[in-house]
Image (tube, rainbow, N blue to C red; front, top):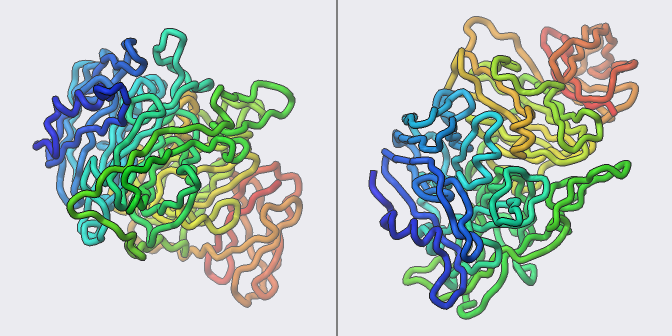
Length: 567
């Protein structure tokens, strides 16, 4: 292993001692490591977050946060994780495409005093990823104390573009974290009433020096609970170039950007000609949609609406001070980036996941498909190399960021509509809006299968995850033999529907057909023989309860599939 850019002792000091001689707090930059072998020690420490006060924290190779790991696509890396916490932990390589035994899920525990050494080929596209603990029931406790770090993957396709990539100068990682501090300025291991925001481990309001040219900011919402709606002062336009798992097709111009817990984005800010000026990066909590933590929460009936002291407000996150340009500055934003190839939905297997609360208006007790997480229970199995379309529905009063392990997915629709342009890249976290909101994603696991160790899916609000809003599935090896032809061009209308749903098979058949309807748990809840006339027909839903349903119709030697929501 070699150190990239800086010696670790020097940068560890910079990372957690961010006050300059003039008393101005600067945003520290985590030191970076590159190579193919990495050593990380997760440990307790103290950090001076508030002047003159030692706050108990957790970090990797230091007191808080951790070094940025620079990986190269195609290389095989080994990561030696030494656990000095005195408690069981894991390290999840959030967003990386790895086998289940390397994923760092609750099934990959690192006992106190032990070392875990996963080794794998980097298969991911150039993007911003991160690492953090993932032990079931303890994820929030360890992450809110500061255990997190960046992963930056580089590849040849990204390297061919004229983009800022000088680490810590014009290419800067920034992790934003809501936290709850007690009156003693210690971190409280909960997230309902977050009362502060840290930027790279220091209090909001610190200054980041950036050169007067095009700069690249890698934004990570590393919070346990709340959303950010990022924007620059004076509504300065910026361009998003990257999503969770890779670059977009082209830069997307915007003035506001919402990121959920666990979500990342890369943006370009053009500071050309602004030397000597300053601007602020702000949180626009007042603009968050209702039901998104960090904004205005829903309160139906006068109960606890889970509002924190900074929710639904706008405030400065950090100041950007524009300095002289570097010797070879990037001064133009490219018109195009890479050519993404989203997965086709043709022939995909449908799957439904419903987010619910008990009681229905609860803001803390959530379920996936009516179940709580059980380490011994595999919720379902998918076949290696087989495409699936998942419909995620949210029947609760708050938004939930859905995270899928071990792979990226493509967002097909949000609320039945085409996703915003900046959501059309590779993703591993997507927000499912509240109050019957829905998201459809397409995913396929090509490279890894494991009959024993599952991948996880869960809400990335950590208290929800720890309280059981998580499931797991096995990727089984591809089946051999003849595979039944499955078509997913079964279109329903209206959708959502109340009593009778109509469909179109996109063919000209007229015949009787057999129809199966499955609920979000995969249980067969309705069987009908239906009449198809010129490829069209309808299904009477009777007394089916509100929820999301998958349908299979056998017609003309094919099986047609689709999903509708009953409201």
